[in-house]
Length: 327
Ligand SMILES: Nc1ncnc2c1ncn2[C@@H]1O[C@H](COP(=O)(O)OP(=O)(O)OP(=O)(O)O)[C@@H](O)[C@H]1O
Image (tube, rainbow, N blue to C red; front, side):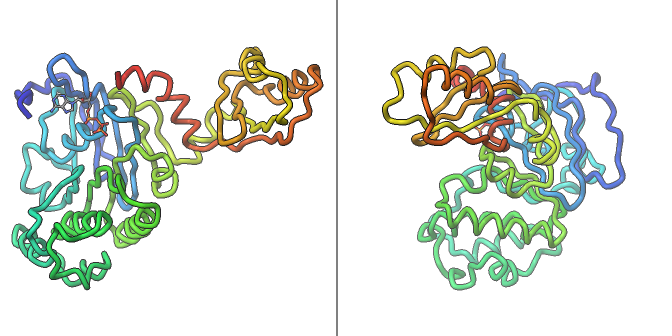
């Protein structure tokens, strides 16, 4: 936090409060030296939602939620959590906000029950640790030291700790990174039950399947800006004029066919998906590919249209410069 010199917020646009908005962010900016990490972010998060902040590594997600949690000072912009500024009304906001930040580690020897009791002691009216242990299916691990828990159990404990103060809003950052597929699915089910118990959840993730599966709304953040916002189906259906198809060529297909398809004016992108090619492009990409194959006497083993998913949206919006950004 060395670069967090407090700066005036004189140019911030005033927040327009909305009735059921629990988090309102307007014109949020934050730089680290010359690096603009967050570059004018607006967000409205309503009560009872799972709201995903989705973006590639380094997009500015963590910096954004750290400002929502009052852990970093914005250079400009406003944040309201339950109507209050998390920096100026730190205690008031922290009482209602649970935060589970990326890769939070506890001392290896600290036992699960001790960790819950310790965190509970920070709050005037904490949740019952026994209830949380049962909600997170950690009852039989209550006496286990943190260092002896599996990755999934450690993750569940860190969720439990973020919920111990009975928060109205919980921020969960990179929740399922490093978990195996079953543990991820278990964690997703758990997050849904936490949302159903009335907690608004801000889920920071770079996993598209996680956002698509869990979130009521999604903000896609790229290079410090919100590049798209809506429900998963809204994001997927915007841009339907683009089409994708899956093509499996016969083994005797002439060499150079892939390059020939990539050069068609209707084709934007050709990528490999297992043994097949995924071809994306303009509305007329399917007839163009069929005609080009027919002209060369190639009969495909398989050719079908592919339904668009959040990954396609993400690649279109944030994918193009992702690698250069990381370099
Ligand atoms: N304390 C810091 N000092 C300097 N630069 C930082 C600091 N924290 C983050 N950055 C830079 O700011 C940009 C945004 O980082 P941030 O962690 O907010 O992104 P992110 O989307 O959460 O990515 P990740 O998932 O990789 O954490 C990145 O380029 C990062 O390198």
